[in-house]
Length: 229
Figure 1 (cartoon, rainbow, N blue to C red):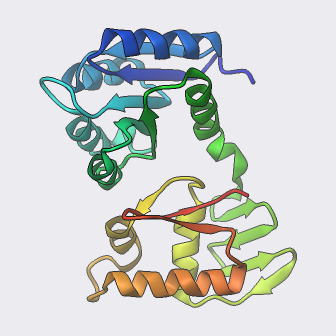
Figure 2: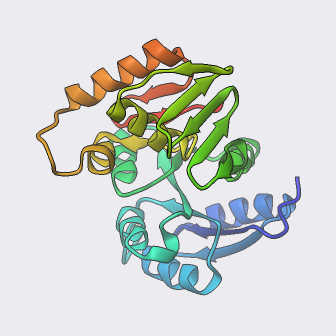
């Protein structure tokens, strides 16, 4: 895989972790930049415009959660992949990370091969979704036409209600990205009606009934994501 043009920023206050991640990602051909806290991370990100940012959660001056939240509010980082480093016991931190816009997390202690594999997979996510036009997605055997509100699976038309379609398109537009329930509510229902988590769960269940169980998976305590396979 040719990664020469892709930039990764690592933000962590532990020099040993920075060195370990930097070494292994450079071996893969990535351009790697580092920062030791959230404030410095934002400054470096503005200079180098990375394709992906790896953030530790607990850091001095500014933690990873706050840094992610602030960067997501900057238009140039709206679509930048952001990944958190978390200890296995930090389930609350994982949920907080997804709530501020994280795309994924990597558990500590860091295993170099697993880390590189995960980063490669994250940066390949968009390549798994072929956007054949501005409003049409082709993913595996699915064709999702936003303009016509049509879905075809294996060449067969699948009838979806309007909100079911909008939910599917949202999830499928970024395969692998975890959408929190709050994010789904904001994107699909906005503030027009009173909607509960139960409403979202019902729509997810209907999508699974019509498309099968493999496309939409649940991330316990967080939300939902679209699976490429």
